[in-house]
Length: 86
Image (cartoon, rainbow, N blue to C red; front, side, top):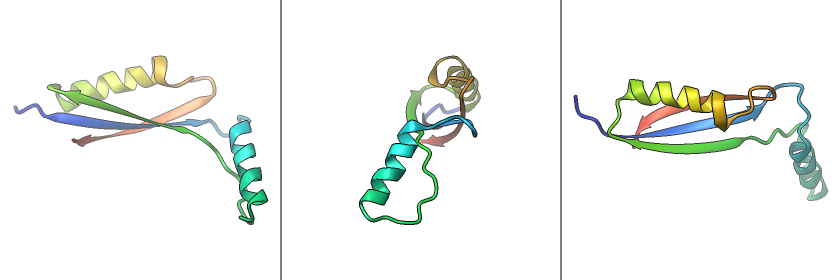
């Protein structure tokens, strides 16, 4: 089995119902700049991780663990990720 470079894109977002002060400030700034009609803004994070020489299955296992243990706060955030060949 050939092991190549894998790129993981992890999206971390606040859970529904969790106050998002940065999203509120962004929505207000958009409105002040004349962008009307934006009802809600939620701000999250995109984390990119690059792996070389590991199988897709090993990367998937590690990334799920990383997301739960350090890259998100499971009390207030959710995460999902995509794995693609880099």
